[in-house]
Length: 459
Image (cartoon, rainbow, N blue to C red; front, side, top):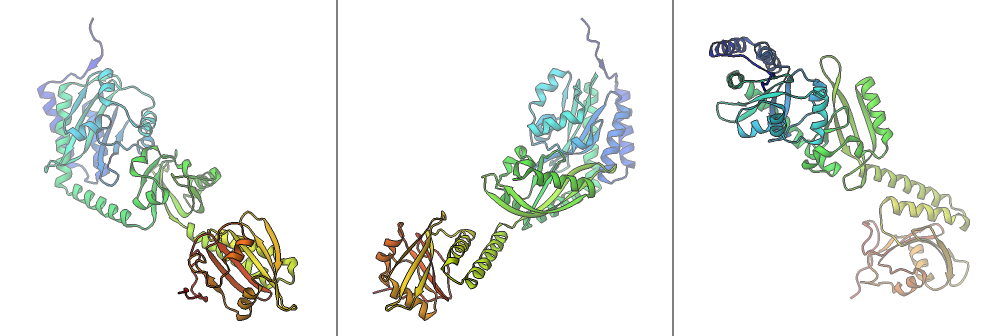
């Protein structure tokens, strides 16, 4: 049975003529890199009529992947999202092996191409419109110093390429490489990539690139650090995965579509599940026809800044509650404010309290109002420990005991143990109008306090 699928009829004369035509055209081309590559694909289609799909990939050192720089017959918006790893697909194999490939039928196309990453497969299917490939030819772009620059691939959805077509493509690929090299475009390209790579690597802020569909295309080192991911995660990260509130991304996309840029401050979820606050801005990158092709964003981790703001606000609330305190009826509000300060500073405490001094008696008595981290509070009274609290209050100095287990200077550990069920290591008393504010922690040296009196360690 004869095979009726078409092949390209060629002979030595027509092949030489086609090659000479391309050499002449290439010599006269505008040496703007993108324009050069686009014109070459157009000219190739004119001399190999069965070509209906083609792409020229250049290797990006920064992200270590082949990037489509010029396309023919593809949906370019989808192709812009493709990042081929070395050895991935036919182009990736040709780039790695430095050898041209011809696949003469769909079975060879599938067998040679292998599997694409999920991200690349989705975008490639969109780029081709679901069309199947009948035959491929692919040749490497290799510079005179034998370093690989990229690949050029031509495809047909209805006919077979011949060996002569592959020979022609190899010659054209060599001519492209030589033209780029001689015109210094490759040096400019590499210098530009090196400057760009150095800039992005050294930036103290995160830089990311995403597709309109939400595929993460690029992270600089600081972005990986902020988000908790590694370079090998890049193909599996979706933009929506990092948002705590989906509406934050929806608002960002709406703004980018409407005005082209957007600034934000919101929470994101790291890979390890930890929530952090980030501040950043994003900008939409558009093609010549105005279609958004990708989003470029910068971000910085402002978690500590937000925590510092929360601490300042909670301290202001505590100060206000203390100054407006008029009687013991106000103590609960003060205790709640104290607890919020401890939580805002992430201080591991097991109790906070107010020691109210009644100096109308002799000796003065103290009523202890204590609150635990879970919000439970209790009141005790008595003269035991009153003299010490009275002394702290009368002297008017903040008294910090970093570790009463290691050095119980005031011999108070036994008394505190009766009031607080959990073991106490760090204690601090801060005098105010009606007595002292007391904080306790099960961790030694729980606070970093410089302006206070600390007892000298007992000998």
